[in-house]
Image (cartoon, rainbow, N blue to C red):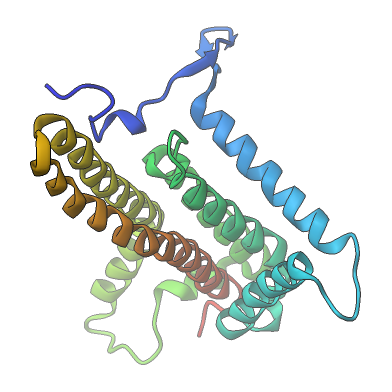
Length: 253
């Protein structure tokens, strides 16, 4: 059995930092809780530093903050229309939280909160609850038009409605699993190649230690790819959230 230091699964283990309980419920503060707190704090610090000294000629932090703002705003406008901008704070918060969580998880000895399906599923459920509340509040029973596409022959309409309902109910699962699976797989791959570096360097002797260069090159090459994946997964989660909110705002479209 591999040592904990080389075990690619060990990086996903949740450890209690200090124990807390509420009645029979365990609400201990864990390494996952710590990383979420750090991520949220860094987002607040980034936005505070980027907007505290607003100027016509922006500095680096101000430029990055403005780019992130415009990026998410343009994404919402293109998918949900101007009405969707009402939900900009919600979608922006999701995008930034997932992005920072993904990036922080790439730092050695840090914990990746988005590699746990309970976290990604909770984020996905917050999106679906928002969609349902907005759709029903804005349209009432007309929201059910979402499940009845226009122009469908009456003969196959029941089957189409059933498929639409199943598709809608599966959204939180696919929404959460997509993010979780990509983060889990990517981090396992990085850990495996990093482990190979140590194993080859320790196991081989003399000039043969040069064989450790191969997994080192692979690890180095995978890092930029994982950074790109970290951004893309935050983007995919945010744009799908915009699409789902558009369904709630315009169920007949």
